[in-house]
Length: 296
Image (cartoon, rainbow, N blue to C red):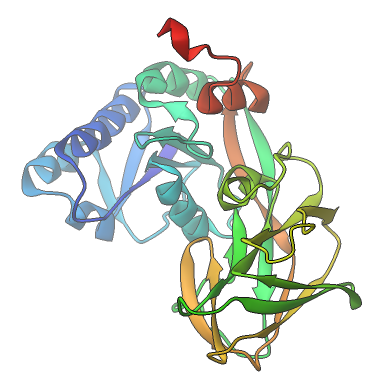
């Protein structure tokens, strides 16, 4: 099998994280796989790590033709990897070397065993829905990604006053949110930003989209789940006449005259999962459900 490996390119990457990147590269080689590294990622590594991974890998363009993409890092790295994979259909395996890790759900300590399973085709692939944001402006693809695996968020551009966000579902008026912002999340994103502001947790395969207001002025405002065939349209009013739109953490300032439209994307992301490991097990592990901290 041919693997491409992506990792964090932030300059504050720790020495431990760099050693773990090499550990995954070496595990792929020892499992019998061919390893490709995007050139920009390879060049972001310190010289001593380049010397270690260079002999066991080949450099390639941003996304070479491979059987599987491996993301090494946290959920942020996984999101950036997903944006690079796009609609190629290449399955993505997430190795967690970060903190929580809902997307990169495979622990670093399980890398060897997981790769052995992969080489034996003993794994499953889960289709994850993405959402797509459009406006009446043109977004150059190299400047702003319009597809989100987690969420599209409408946010205040300044710290002064709240936004008025007029929401429509399939052109039918829903409500006007008086809030600091609004998060429109996929089922995958239900355990990300949406969860932190009180949104429901959804199984990642449920065909739905979640709308959750950020610090709403109206205390009766609650998270809403709609069918994923829905078209969500938003018109924003701001005292500064500007607002932020964030797509999986990548932000841009828009004028309030620009309306936002969000709907399900026309492709999915294929995520590699180990056999016998379920979403509910991940919830128990990551959120420590049922754990009695008094026993620690």
